[in-house]
Amino acid sequence: MTPSIPSSMLLAAAFCSLTALGAWADGKDEIAPTVAPPPENNVPVSQEFTMEGSYTGGSSTKQGNARLGDVSNINSHFDYVVSPQVKDGVLLRFGVDTERNSFGLFPAAPLPNTLQSVNFIVGTDLAVGEKIIIRAELHPGIYSDFVDVNGRDFDMPVQIGGTYLYSADFQIIFGLQIDLKSNYPLIGLPGFRWQFADKWVLSAIPPKPQLQYEFSNALTFYTGAEILAGTYHLNDSFGTNHGHGPATNNSQLNNNICDFTEVRVGAGLTWKFTPNLSLDVSGGYMPYREFQIHADKIGYDTHSTTFRNEIDDGAPYAEAGISGSF
Image 1 (cartoon, rainbow, N blue to C red):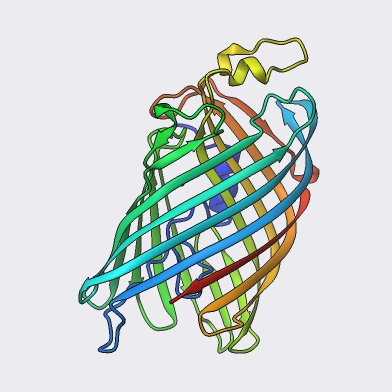
Image 2 (cartoon, helix red, strand yellow; image 1 turned 90 degrees about the vertical axis):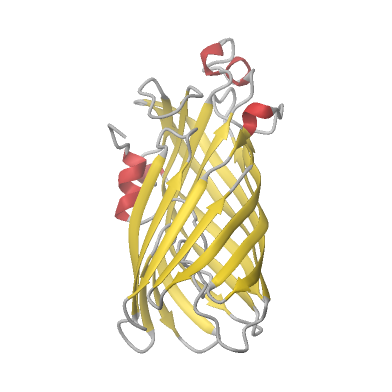
């Protein structure tokens, strides 16, 4: 989701989360493919979208034991996917995905002001028999601080998700991501979805594990966690322009990669206000955020520079979004 596992990954595993790999039928579970053996009245082409934004307050950021200053984050995300059905149990997926983290930084912060991605989605959903569903996607695009966009900002993460339909109430899910620019080039985490009572669902699926209560057909309450994560290329002058002090030239950070992780825990609600559209509102506490800056190379790099906050130095967050499927 490596010879050594950093604390951010331990938190991710604890919450059964890391990076998004798709969406479950209710739009909240991120790695479960949605295709199923189609009924006779299946629409040949389906569409889905998500549009969401959030604000995380300032949290005290440290490098090692040195306290540097407060960092806040405005996150925005949009994706749109068209899925034509080419034959029974096979859907293609074509779309676009964009995400932006805009940080409020302290003076002379050795951190990027922006981490942003704009990428295409190319993939397929495949039903294997009656019990197994597989999703495979490529995400080619630009992942960078968008200061000086060039070919080094290009990346193409590969995401694979699988679902085993054990029963109508219990599904086992596994997600895998391959990103050769990340310090963690291969990430895999399991999950499950269990409707253990009439109105209760335990959705332990990355990167949004939740305990859900269906108050009505239109309204669902939930509590759980969420992880924002991504790998981004920093510009050729990043270190020079973002030194560790007002007069510091930190050029060894030029042209590096930043693995960014933000962990959130909270509660919210999903309101299905039309048959095709849902409003999601949530809030809570961000206990952990990490910037890990390392050389642009394949695989784990032990010579990384890490900035993070302690759990008790976190901050509140609020999030709202609209999703739809047609």
